View 1 (cartoon, rainbow, N blue to C red):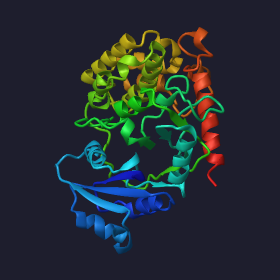
View 2 (cartoon, rainbow, N blue to C red; view 1 turned 90 degrees about the vertical axis):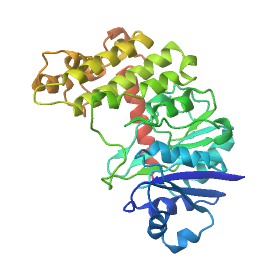
View 3 (cartoon, helix red, strand yellow; view 1 turned 60 degrees about the vertical axis):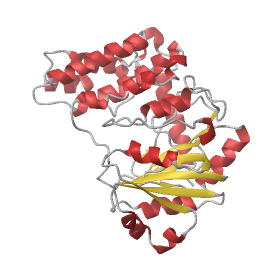
Length: 362
């Protein structure tokens, strides 16, 4: 059986998929790269790749014509047709560092792991500070204690036989990977992460991404149904659910609020969405407000308050790039200041991970 297969979904002939494919082939293990021409003629993909890559026996070009503009469909089609022991994903405008797959597979073998989380380095802005694992931890990672949920995208590798039926959520405007990633992190399968291993390299030089912001706020958070429907969700501890809920509120809900500000504040339907989601998350994660930063709570309260103006909302949200300020590190419950999922320790763990990724960039 082939050691690893990387699935690349491509939706536009302008994407630099030759860069992505070449980076996958720069490994010594038995590798396959499957390029999914999604609602795109296979010939357009062949033309972009060029004769040498098309002729390489490690390259497969598969076509999917479904008329749906969603990365979930392309990735799921690739998983349905996967042939390797381990599978992974690669964005059509991204690439892997040299020998990344070789080292990720070796890491899995050393620890008999079913899931390998890849370090991510954004070439335009630096390392992604997640997952915020406990210092010195590489193997035997825990979804809650090692904050694996801080990583949404399931970038890296997973053993196909361990997750034969796991698929991305189709039919969502955004968040197709939310339930997928959570399933990997909390399934109980052995997970490894080495921030010093070769990274997944993210580019930001393409402007035609399939998933874009827009539409009502409900579109941003529709993935919650998929999370709750996943069988792993029922097995998660209250502490794990509380930590995940805090991350969703801090990152996804407040992120959505910032993109739905209007000169008159927040639209009534969006305001109701934020109120309902906040209550929903409090329902399956009692005490979540206590580990959120005070500035996050302030922003949430302003977003659901009918009288909040645009200026009041922007003041409540504040400068999200500033972390070392009182309201950014002090949680709603001061007794939770040193809780592993409260801002202080979580931010510090992320800083350590980011530094390790950047120091290993080679």
